[in-house]
Length: 236
Ligand SMILES: [Ca+2]
Ligand SMILES: [Ca+2]
Ligand SMILES: [Ca+2]
Image 1 (tube, rainbow, N blue to C red):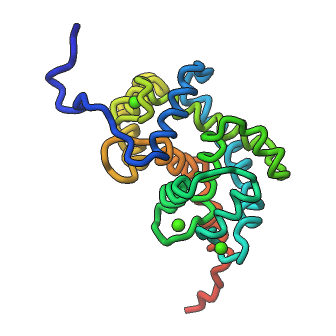
Image 2: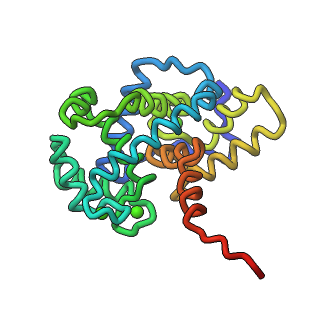
Image 3: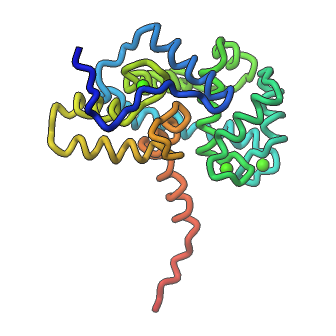
């Protein structure tokens, strides 16, 4: 009853994952959704932003460990070493897919903010993230919880549980959060466009992660560093 046929948006087509990695992300998100979500509103996530930000910044140490030549990016070879060290058995194809997926600026290196996304994907795609921590011998306090919070935020937005967030889902979520303020639709649109990196009208988990790190303020960190490096010779 009441199928919104007249609506121009949201054609009813099944969304086909473009890579095996994307298919795995969709599965992982649907598994999480099936377990039930404790999140009641997006506001609860927003309240956690400072905590999440603090936690993600600590990944810098892990990043530096794997950036063997300290050039500020993890290249393909370094990433392979990284997985070897963590005893994560990925196929060559998985490593390639992960690398390509996270190297969004396509400069053949995974920079810090790309690395956070990569780490989160690895944690969530592995069945047993706890074992990952033990084997790595790295101190990642609260990191797993943080990644799970981010995943729950995505699952919260993905109302129809197809593993993607559509524009309609985003608008609905923001409307729920702000209880019907007029500007909220616009905010949702803007947020959605920020997230939809490849502009295909759907946001997958990876795109969501990139947007999320921006929201919590990881980008500011790099700006701060740049500003520190700027010399102040402004005598005209
Ligand atoms: Ca490097
Ligand atoms: Ca890159
Ligand atoms: Ca969806």
